[in-house]
Amino acid sequence: MRTVRRHAVPTWWRDAKLGIFVHWTPASVPAFAPTGEEIGELFAEGRSDAFAHSPYAEWYENSLRFADSPAARHHRAVYGNRPYRSFAADWEAGLDTWDPDAWAARFAATGARYVVLVTKHHDGYCLWPSEVKNPNVAGFHATRDVVGELADAVRARGLRFGVYYSGGLDWTWNEHPIGTVTDLALAQPRGAYVEYAEQQVRELIDRYRPSVLWNDISWPAPVSRLARLLAHYYERVPDGVVNDRFLPWSPVWAAARLPPARALINRVVAKGAKQGRGIVPPKPPLFDVRTPEYTVFDDVQYTPWECVRGIDKSFGHNEASSEEHFLDRADLLWTLVDIAAKNGNLLLNVGPRGADAQIAPAQLIRLDWLSEFTDSAGEALHATRPWITPTGQPPEGGDVRYTARDRDVFAFIRAPGPAATVARLTLPELQLDAATSVRRLDGGAVHWERDIGDSMHVRLDPPAGYDAPTVLALHNAVAR
Image 1 (cartoon, helix red, strand yellow):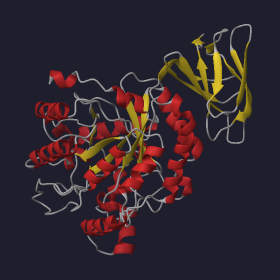
Image 2: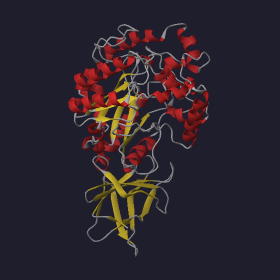
Image 3: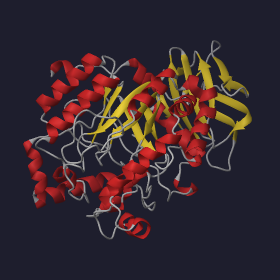
Image 4: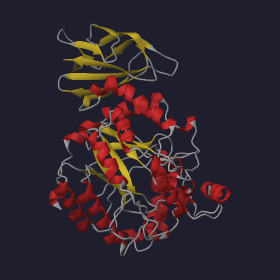
């Protein structure tokens, strides 16, 4: 266990800044979830049926277990009594039009450095022809090796490939309805599932050598057994990365069955959500990187981390999402910049359609926005680290984020509002001298000067806008 605890996060991951997550399950065939609230907002309300109203389309099967949930009403109206697991056949039929090379090309163009594929979500359906037999639902897996095909396509484009596995939940083993966070403990399978999950993860490790091992919810075995599994992973993939959702099983989990403990845990979760924290997993004893969900830390984090979120309010494809539910260009690009300045990565999810294995136009547009931005700004993102002062507030208004590499400091400038531009800007965080040089990464003109206190003033032509940050590279600039 000591060796596992000492594992260092590899440089390739810290340099990446952007990764692509892919949620693509049988739930992407019905492709429905309510769009009214993000998941953190539901937790903040302290509802006893929060997950029944989940905006995550990949939670469709659980939502069906609540008779009056939006998903259950939708299902009765569209599909009648059709069982959820029958959608697996539709999903596999959609593979006839799947082009993994096209996906990989789009992902690489965004400037992403790694791709993480959901290989088994909570519904228990496996995207590879696993040799580990599920005794509860026979053959509940793809006959085509989707995991292997995407791994090959992604690596051919020079990207790293990782796998997501739902270790904490598998609804082919435990169908307990999940309404609150404490229901997660009641829904975690035990018994023979422990060996099943471990053997599947070992199979994924040995077959695909994933650069990221991304578990979800928790892990059904105690920490000593988990340590042996992770040691096996690091032996096979020495520069691999493990996320922070391998919370190992412990006898204290039984407390979640007691009403007082359930009430306390749910209140703590609601309080955190009200503070705008979204979902921040508890720290397990063994992990490499933190993974806050639909939230960003306020300050620089010295523990490596990645913000994981969808392009809209869901991870899986949701036909109910309209343009207002997706990240707009300004928020998408600034989210990436803000996270990089705080020593994190953005793991941005793409949710392909289940019916035809295509990525919907609204999501492709967002990938294109990233491609356009990183074509010029990638130099200021990849392989950078937080600067001494990660954020700035110019007196003229707007926002600034800083990254750094060696003797270069990069300033990302955003105007104060959608209708605003900034033609002249003060950067009081920077001290300049005769050795300082300044250039603008998008090729526009920039002129700079010092005041008596050595603050930097810049004039931008064209002015900095709001939709996409203007990026300056400053050589030999130092903090005041």
